[in-house]
Length: 218
Figure 1 (tube, rainbow, N blue to C red):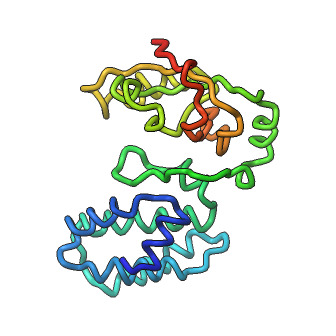
Figure 2: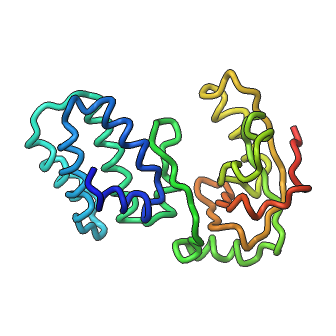
C-alpha cells in the first residue's frame, strides 16, 4: 500500500493496517501493485450517497486486472467494503457494521463519536448517569487479563451480553470458556452509544472502567 493509503487507514479509519498487509502478502500472488492502485482509487473516490454506483465503479476498475485468485478477490472485497462504509457513514458505522465472523479488522476507537450518533442514540446517551453499569459477553481469558486490554464493545443490557457470550460466539470460540462481565465506567469514557440491532451498545475507552467494579457474574 502507498503511504497515503496506509496513513488514511491508520489515522482516519482507526484500523490496524498490518492486518491488511499480512493478507496481501499471503494471498496476493505477487500482485501487490493491485492493492496499491486499488487503495489509491478508493482513497480518492468521492462517495456521496450512491453506494451502488460506487461498487459498480470499483468493479469496473478491478476488471482491468483480469481473473484474480479467490483469496486476492476476498481481500480486495474486505478493503473495498471498509472504505465504502467509512466514506458514506463514518467511523461509527465502520465499527457497527464490522464483519466479526471474517478476518476484517475492527476499528480501535480513540475519540468521541457523539457527532455521528443518531438523535435517538444521543437522547439515550444524554440521559445516562455519570457512572454507567455495563455488561460484556467474553472469554475467561479476556477477563483474567489487563483491564486496559478489554474489548470496547459493552452493553447496557445483560441479556445482550449473555447472547454474545453463549450464543453468537459459541461456535467461533467453542474451545474457550465464556462468561459475562459486569463493570462500571465513567460516562466521559463512553465514545459512543448505539441502539444498533437492539444491542444497547456502548463503545468505551477501557481506561474509564472503575477497577473495583469489574466482576464475572456468570
